[in-house]
Length: 320
Image (cartoon, rainbow, N blue to C red; front, top):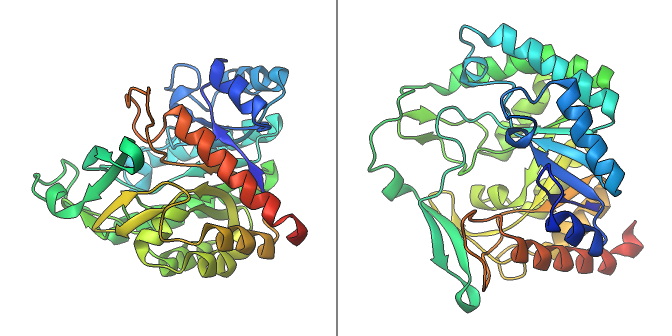
């Protein structure tokens, strides 16, 4: 396993902190590439990856789905053009040596939380979700959306792009729906269980059609997280290291060392399957002196989580 951090595209103190902690792998979000509207452009991707390389950091993952929209997810007008852009995006990343693209298949409302400043350990702040509260709002503008529309769009997408991913040497890593619920205000969600992922992986049998194993989402699904890691094996292409307390309907993000999941057993499971890819801490607590202007992604909590993760990796070094 290779610890990684989500980093901004322009050098700042977070780059320096990463190197000081011995982290030399970056995860970047598509919204921050170039002007955020055309992250598939070779020139923008080249400038980004070379900027990191010159500083001694490799870009291991690009997250986000800006090259595609709900038109592709739902199989509507415009998807063919979007899929062609996504193929170009994969080819460009392959030329630049970026090994993983993380994406999701949530239509309409994407990542959802109902609280972003819940009190946590020692006065730190964390995020949480309450489905009863969320459902008090009106149906989403996109509603109604049936799950079979999403499945049809995903099957077409994977059939088109996985062969290109194989040629480019860039692995796809599908993120779970967050929260992993069947419907949010009139819009179905489909990537919500271990069984749903089995269906995804059966659509196109290739290591390039894989998973972002977001531990907190699998915990919210009610899955045995280490068992799920072993179940998916080499189809795990990227890991989000996090934990939650509760269920998909109501949960809070926990400190990495203070949740219900046995994180040491998770790392042992990754060792068992031979996972050697990138793993980044996700959804951390906001700590003293921090502003909480980007809940879940402030700096100090990520430093703490990296230290904890590196300790678990050292504990399991003999499993390599």
